[in-house]
Image (cartoon, rainbow, N blue to C red):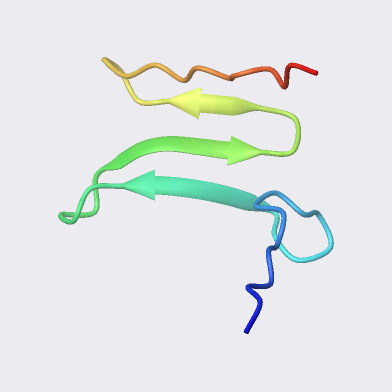
Length: 50
C-alpha cells in the first residue's frame, strides 16, 4: 500500500496553517504569502538543496 502525500500549503485545499498548543494558544500562522509567529517563537525555513 502506498502513502498519498499532499502538499501542506496547497492553495486548492487550504488557506492557512495554524499551530496551537493543546490549550488553544496560537503559536504561529502560515499562509501562502506570510508567516506570523507568536511572541517568543521563530519560524525557520529550510531551502531545498540539489
